[in-house]
Length: 478
Image 1 (cartoon, rainbow, N blue to C red):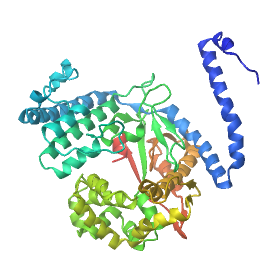
Image 2: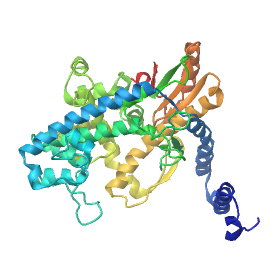
Image 3: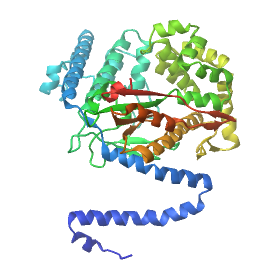
Image 4: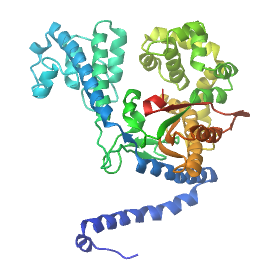
């Protein structure tokens, strides 16, 4: 290998200089990787080979991107802006009642013409500092303290703080909820305004093996174009459309996969039966909340409905979430959350036993091997709450990721660029576009690939899935 001096590098053109730097950056990993592989066992090598193979579909989707319907973007941005203005006017009236503008003068941000036009005359809900001042100093609400925050001032007005206030305070909670709504609307508009690639498409970078249990992550691409598709709200997905009028969007979504895996890992017969009933969230709402299936269905699936609460109750409880955090997530008081958990554990004893026994399991050994053959070593003390939560969530979440990625790889290798064009994968779903002609035959082939039986505690489990078809991503994922 020829050693290049810094003087020689400076003589190169900018493009050649970047290539030389990249080549030099690869030299150290080339020396490290063989030594690491020599120390790895067969399970670790299998995971390594699998994640290297997954770079194929990841790069394919990252390079392809998704087409944007610009005709939909403009009115959607206007709609979000109008909703934000309404929320700001409401908050401005609250600020007027509490005389917020007399206590704290206008900031430079508020003095901008656009913001003044939108109504930021007294209170800017996008200013973290002003939200804290308004809620904790003017409204005299009990401050929310984040002990993990850096610096001397550990009070915060983040999402957890605002959710906590919205539950415990009937009046100030309205303000907190409206501030959250403003932030949500601004974030949704930011997604739609994301920077397009030169060809007008939205792209992202898929980061394989970025998380410790096998889940992928997503971010803007190497040119800083696009966005994180994983965080794109459902309502904003309407702007993403097929690349041709002759094609449609198809979204395949695994049904209640993580909770189903938890039921089988815990060998909880009642919880397994709830999944076999057709809809586990409805079954849990009936078992824990004492409702009939008809009553659950009648109240719908919106935020605050029994169906929604049952779904949140399961995810928070199965993964060892603290009572206060789980209560905020469900939008209920801690006392009610404690009661619901008692009912949940009474009905699903296997799940309760798994949660109670996890500290003992970690104390016996920090090493684990998932039912998919993925090894992991938990770092930290066996009785640390964060370590316990990680152990409870790791195998179900990692198992779903590994199952879906095996399916994704098969679909990519057999059909991508021929009868389907892969666009995105999102934890438990796969998005692609396909020609309208021959769509039924295409879906039948894909359905066969979705059949992925796995062995969990001596049982053969095959996760169910839903398939949606539409003219845009939102319609396909409805």
